[in-house]
Amino acid sequence: MKVAHKIWLDNNGKAFGEGPYELLKRVEKTNSLHQAAMEMKMSYSKAWKLIQTMEKRLGFVLLDKKIGGSSGGGSRVTPKGKDLMKRYGRLEKDAKEAIDRIYRKQFGNR
Amino acid sequence: MKVAHKIWLDNNGKAFGEGPYELLKRVEKTNSLHQAAMEMKMSYSKAWKLIQTMEKRLGFVLLDKKIGGSSGGGSRVTPKGKDLMKRYGRLEKDAKEAIDRIYRKQFGNR
Image (cartoon, rainbow over all chains, first blue to last red; front, side, top):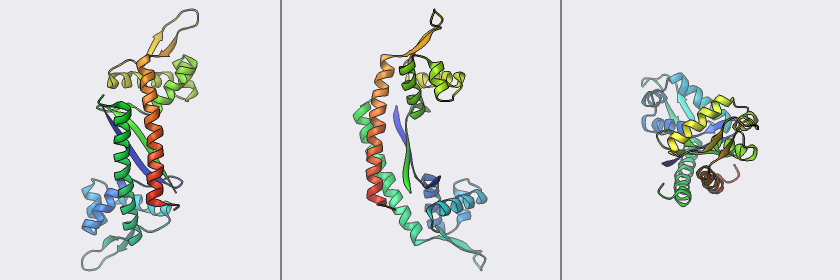
């Protein structure tokens, strides 16, 4: 037996969570939403819609998109997006530790 | 903006969580899985299957079922089921407090 959890931000619907966080981490590495979506076995259109929905609910832009150019465009996480990632990453890490601790207290080694 | 979460027990699949907890609380009050399911706008067959799945994954019985009789049968939460409810209830309450605290630390009043 083990404990599992999900944590997300809500603003009249899911505004940010594990999926978008993973997606943005991959955009940071690759500077490409195409590449990030592919790595998560997600269609580009689904990834694009997800980002749009999150941006709308958060009230700020997560990705700066460059269209075209010799490199074929690309996406960069905005400073506000990076700040959100940092805070969400800490929220998730600290919450996981707290939940594991509380679980052990209530359920021991069952 | 606010933080939301779900916590569940896992043993090769969901073994217990908010839904079954709510269902068992209603069985405790009504001594009837029929009544409990109805209160949650869940079909009896769905409630029954949910209990069966949880019992299999937990490895113990949650409900003692009495079939027939002048009262038309009924269901009672077993002592092991009540113990689980108590522990899960505390896990959920303490985890909610911890997550709210961690959220405020990371996100303040955003």
